[in-house]
Length: 142
Image (cartoon, rainbow, N blue to C red; front, side, top):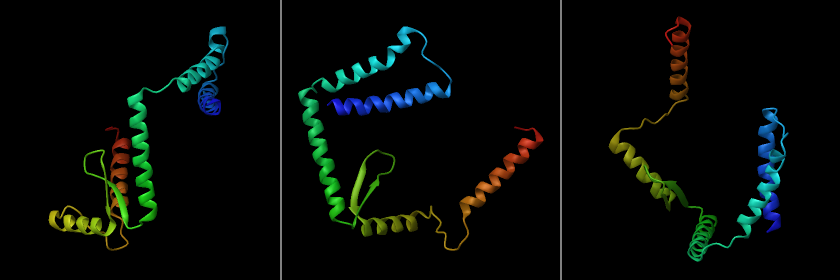
């Protein structure tokens, strides 16, 4: 447990110290110098506090689920994981079935355009928008 606390403390301390150094701030007051030792005590208290029973059960169950998913993904290379539309839910499925469904959806909706040649439409759009914004900026409109 002390190793975990020390690792977390070192990470926090380096980030905070980096911010302080970036803004050229130093600890002058005694209560300011107490900040890092206080942080270490708080981290130790958090790590030594026992989890509530229900939270521990849930954490173990979720860990088992994640381990099972990782094991399946390593064993079966034909499975893909993707996010579902407009939600935070992941969908696992066969990669070929997913590709077939995606192409079928693209054909049905005609919402997508397949780029078949070497032309990159996105970079052209970016260049056009950049040139329009540059001209508006030079003319003083924006």
